[in-house]
Length: 448
Ligand SMILES: Cc1cc2nc3c(=O)[nH]c(=O)nc-3n(C[C@H](O)[C@H](O)[C@H](O)COP(=O)(O)OP(=O)(O)OC[C@H]3O[C@@H](n4cnc5c(N)ncnc54)[C@H](O)[C@@H]3O)c2cc1C
Image (cartoon, rainbow, N blue to C red):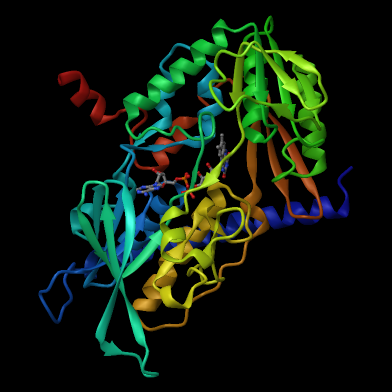
């Protein structure tokens, strides 16, 4: 029997569906007008357009690039600097670390480009494949502010290649760094695919798999490994007593425990492992602080995601939190008066929101809007995290998953069965405007 708080949550979900549909319609209409009116150089001069540079093109940066490519005023353009060859679709990583054969891991690498809605062709967007190594300030001493202070007029990025790119506005969307199954850590698709296959081989060859970290990635991977190889010992080791304590409520913990135990995963909660600093691939056991020993010939670490905030740490050390995230104002500008033209969004930013793809996309929309407003001299909007950003689908075995909603007063968990071992990754390709799973770079690689 649903409670009142459940009914309220259902009502909220319905209103979010309407609000998202309305936003999509509004953005589609705006992008239509933009196509008809935009010109890269300003109507009053033929000089080079001014750059809004986005560093990183994953959920946050790629979506911000799409929004801006379809809304920047004439005279401005978006420049995206991304080091990876492809969009790396994190949600399917735990599954593709486990299942072998069928070439599914290729589906985690989505070609970049079409999602920008023709921005590359119109000149409202420029794509640069490269890694930003440094942000250099550039003050324009000739144009003083009303109060006599130098106003920040942007700066310059230095790429690993040595190339320099000027910016008037900068969006830092550099996310987090980790190892598989949380991030790939390789820039080229071919190297990434090799890593997935290595992990699949290690799990297949193992007798005792130990998964370290009971966040969503650890839970999903442990469940998949045990479901695919019921004869292996699979242990999920978590230092807290509650699984997924960071982003989910207590009910989700109960459901996950029940499903993992049903599969036969050994759960060790509230215990820490003592790991050697060096090579963990040749371990034969994992020793816990309590002295307990767990046999292990395959250790998979699902811990230790670190925000990629070093660029801002160097430029503005006071803008970095203890956890390494970038402090931002509700406008998503970094919390440093000297750098009001720099914004941070997604996993790298301390926005108070859950760190997930949906929140990153919401912030991307806000930042795009605020940069256009800043160019037009309008007051910025404020981003406040929304409960629906926490909506997630979590797999609990090869054909089982749950949809999860939590508005802070109620948790709704809807079980779901799916036969699609690739977790509907085709939908992600379609969303990004690419026919599943056709990658032009595969043809080029085959020709070479
Ligand atoms: C296993 C797993 C499952 C998940 N499942 C879900 C889910 O079901 N739903 C959900 O909403 N979220 C999910 N998430 C969370 C989601 O993946 C992250 O919140 C999201 O990826 C954050 O996006 P981002 O753009 O902020 O950063 P990231 O995805 O970390 O991307 C940062 C980008 O910046 C680039 N970059 C970094 N530094 C530089 C530089 N110096 N120069 C150039 N480029 C640079 C990187 O190459 C990368 O492309 C999951 C995460 C994991 C690990």
